[in-house]
Length: 231
Image: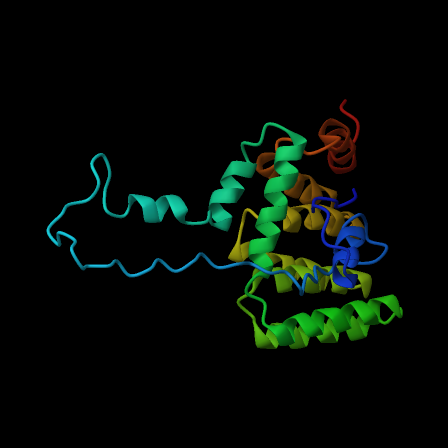
């Protein structure tokens, strides 16, 4: 099964890699959006108290924090919940893009540089060096779920599917609703020949994205691999 869930990104080098690599294992998808800019919400200006009744209550019909909540950006968990109820492929595609942007926004500049270097190593057919780059990135930011997911992909390219499964276990411990991690796990378990594990991972994919393309065909393929022809 080909993992292809991310939206089009800006045509930077990192963006081109991000788009093409998730379409299969031919170039191990390390998500290296290093130029991503997330603009923080504008600071609310301090109120001008001159001539203002300090005892005035909140606007009628709402709490004093209602506007602040409305302006808050959705979290990854909230977007994942929306994704699990998506009605169209385009809607799911948009939600996945927003989720991935949030996953990347807290990467430090040095971590992003290591991800770019990992990509250079993969381009040069040096997957073990790419894994080392990801090791270094994880030393810097071990709490970033996406880095574990990326190292799993590098380890798979380095012919270490068992290591990839271990890294995906950490990634999914951080976020058990990471659709991309579950899709990668389906592929990795297929490489390992554990088709029942691949089948179980696929059930998570279907729950997390009801618009998954070719779901019926893939479900049947994995069912046959895992359980054989019905008797």
